Length: 412
Image (cartoon, rainbow, N blue to C red; front, side, top):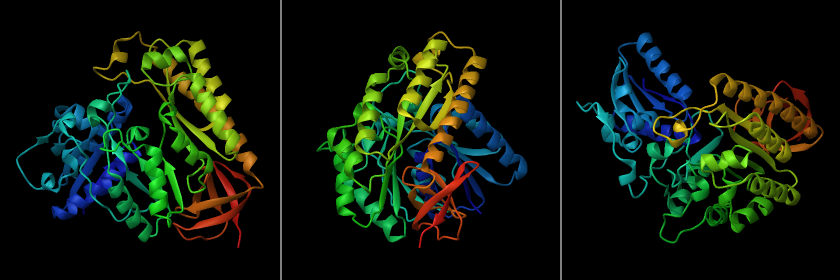
């Protein structure tokens, strides 16, 4: 029996479904594909630990390692005992590369690829929301990031392909689709007519009226155009949850990161959206302890998160990535980075609790996932008190809280 073990982002999880199909077509058996992540050193440590664990538990299984970490450093993975082959980000999606061969390392240059290879999939095992890759790669060069090198430049999926894939998902019972990629707000800049993300979303909603809910995995406020803003504010099928790629709340640190937004832009954007769509909720990615970050600079980040009420937080300590400009900057001690992440998570716990408390007594539309647990439109996690069908959307009144869940009674 084959297995795909996935680390990292939603884009990886989407591509893992394509890898499963490639293994089937290649008629392989007893293969474990480890789909790697390279966003931090900790992510790579976990990948390598998993590979060694698989080999220790069953040395007879063939291990193939694919993805970003392999793209950046193929030899360090091909030399791990038990690994038979490593495949880069372009190579991992091709069926022929999973056939038995003597080629142990297959890594093509992402920057030589002019367009995305696209394949259709039917479903996601054990998932009620379907992810779809709308673009890959990034044209920007944040000083802390190695993913541009791992994924290449921005490449967008043609709109007709996106619509075709969504129609298949809808036909198979999916009511919510999540657009994912490396920098999805840069969608379309490489396509012939240069359609924006906003225009693409509008066409998808028009051409697939059966789709009930559409969500973005993350956005960069510096790239939100008027059309996307109009959809965020006025389109009921566009989910009122925005995960912002912030990284910091201090303008000097943002400049040293080579980010394209300022603290003031974030605040203006969030306040404008909130004033026009009251039920919107925000999440944020934050890097704590970026080189040169002082206590005062870190406090700016805390203040920004409170100012915009970013209740969903993905915070991690800065990770020094080889050959990035930030790796050459004066480093913040590792223990300070970890303490700042701990502090952020404690603050976020209070913010999340307050947000959930504010939802008690309200009616929420919940997409049911597994075990009678689902997501409200604002991404709140709701545990339903009665048995409900996965993939269905139900109306529930929020009765209270229990640990990390809201408790909802399904309305008939």
